[in-house]
Amino acid sequence: MRSRLAASLGYVFKQIGDDLGVPTADARSLVEAVEARRQSPQLFGAYYDLVLAVERDEIGAARTIAAEIRDRLNAPSPERWVASLESRPIGDQERYQRLLLPEDIAASEPASADFAAAEERIGRAMDLLDRGFPEMAAEIRALLFEVVIAAGPTERGAITFDGSSSYMLWGAVMLNALGQTNVLDTAQALAHESGHNLLFGLCANGPLIDNDDEESFAHPLRQDPRPMDGVVHAAYVTARMHQTVERLLESGALDEAQRDAAEKDIELHRRNFAAADEVIRGAALLTPVGAEAMAAARGQIAVPA
Image 1: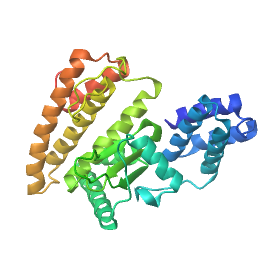
Image 2: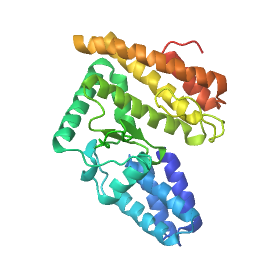
Image 3: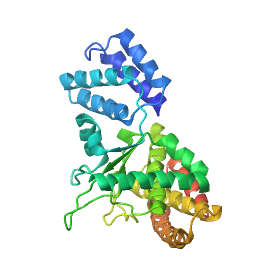
Image 4: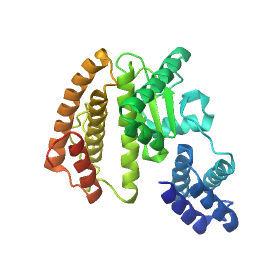
């Protein structure tokens, strides 16, 4: 993903770098900086905002975003893990809200006690994964640059969220401070959301499916129908949660209460995966990337290909 970002930025700067205030010599050093080290999700978000501004012929806005990209790449590499929404700069907050959540869902700063509890659960969840499924723990750390904790709407009947990811903010996830209540659920949420980021990376060269985006299908994790891409994502991350719980059970790292919850979660994941897989087998036009992802998911949950 970082290599693709560097190549794409290099192309943009080559075409209109002078208009953006990025001369050729500066463009070369910026592209090299992208390739040299791990990058913040905000850099990916700024790139997409830059391209969209250029497509709208908003050159003034594009020049401002190009300056942001330059500033981010010239600054020391930030090393963050868990952060509250409002601890981020104002511009970053806006981008998280805009790119990670649908327009009809608002996120806000969690209460300090809720943030502290969520941060503590995330730490304990990663410790649990380190003991019981170290490969998953390592992959989560490799995929996720930042876990942002926010508060979802709490009004009765309001649409809220448990977690959210976006290919435009690769390496970031937003978790609802009240979305998970225990360590096992938090471990699964991290496996789930990092799985979306993994699929985004696998799709850097093309989509999972060739279905029309306007087509909608039943979705096992949501009440409303979604495009087939969402169904494939749901199946994949459900299998990933199943794999995580199964490995934790096998490891002996769970206490008695966690084992009881894990057995129930495994059955739920099997049912949800079966529902999604039935839709995919019946209607998905899988690309080679999508077929490989689904084969891996079926292997994780022991379903015949």
